[in-house]
Image 1 (cartoon, helix red, strand yellow):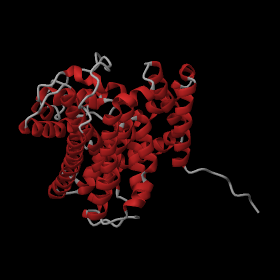
Image 2 (tube, one colour):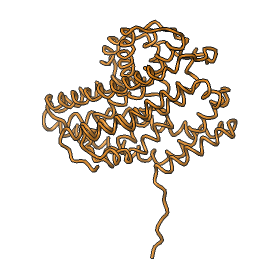
Image 3 (tube, helix red, strand yellow):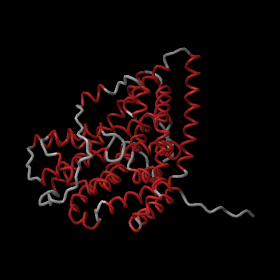
Length: 411
């Protein structure tokens, strides 16, 4: 009788290596320079497949949707869900920060220089215009996701408008290429535990080397940290599961369990884009969402559906206002909510992008950009939590939209 091969589920491997990496970075911060290359190679492997995955998946997904009416209906549902879930997240953060008021009495002397944070001066109207690429190859090189998504949608739609022979050839070619990219993705995913170990060790080591002793940071920014974290917990463990249950009419606990690998990877990498290949694989294979829906909702969500980032930006800006003793009017508070919504949409799916976009919100209500230095010490850690919520929110959207289209899922 053959012996049963012992194996540990991938999400348990990730949890174990995440914890071990944290301990390694805390105990041996200087030694992480010998392991950093592992995480760098892992992230490069994920980033390598992002652009072709988005281009091919959206093109094939849109081509399979068919008519302009179907595409419009799917797009309206998706954007409607994104706006609703993001607005709920912002309101959750707003209520918490106004109730707890973590900025009152905060120590203004405890600041980190924010010299490397660029001022996001681009207007929202310019962002909309720049969605249309001048050169799609230049957009792919520079990673302009909204431009790539726009081109992929247009390309996929007009595949359905050419002759039968050309349509079949193009569809078969794109589907075959997408299969190859997914095979490469699955190969990269096998190295996730090693990548997570390296990245978590690097993050903790960086905090130690910057002089941010965890106990000191928590003692001075603890109330702010807990406020953001509490808001993310409410949104991730109450709001999103309720939406999956009520709007999607499926079991939210099974869905959450199925999404453990992309959620944990998002937590360790702090990148929605880098986690996209894993999210697509989990949603399609474990939840049973069709490629047509997953390939449309997830790449779009990784770019503009930032629930966690929106909540964080609202709390952070209100915290900075409270810390500086600025009493925002009701009109200014509404501007914070609205601008946080727009900033979250324009936020890139890369680590710490929320800090860059926060400059937009601060400028909108006349608060000093130096206020970013107040929260920079704990931002990298909070970035991990909010990215996990961002990615989880994207997967919830795929399930809800799939059910609204009449698909029968495995959950």
